[in-house]
Image (cartoon, rainbow, N blue to C red; front, side):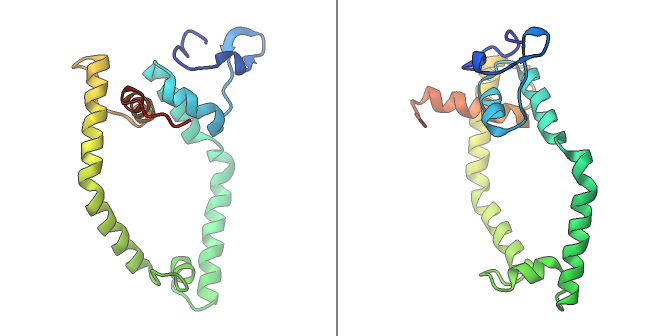
Amino acid sequence: SDVELAGVPHLDQLPEAEGRPGVRRIALKAPYTAPVMQFAESAEVRRTLQAAMDRKCLAENRDRFLETLRLRHECARLLGYPSHAHFMLEPKMARTPEAAEEFLLDLVGRLRGRRDADLRILRSAKKEREGADAGPLRLWDVPYYVRRHKAARGVDEA
């Protein structure tokens, strides 16, 4: 409802649910979900939307996805590669899945300190807004508190 979506700009541009005045329908596509995740003051609304996005097309696409993985592996094997990853990476800079994984692990190690500092800032912002018993920072909290943090520092991404 409009009350639950407090903080979200341009609510009037979201269609109302049929036969339910004041209740908005949010398409599960980024142009519609991003503003809700970034601006909705209600953590429960953000959590509910995150759960819906996580489940989007899951049932319809699960079997297709698994079949795609199976066929990719089969094609790679027919071409003489141990896996689809080996086939795809051979012409690229990493050349092997092992080299790609090593690169990514090194990158994660280098970025860990910055990530931890950013998470401390977001956790602190959540506690400041919701109180000491705010609970942990959740996935659905991140876009909201990132947006608030940027706004507090005058970052304009327009």
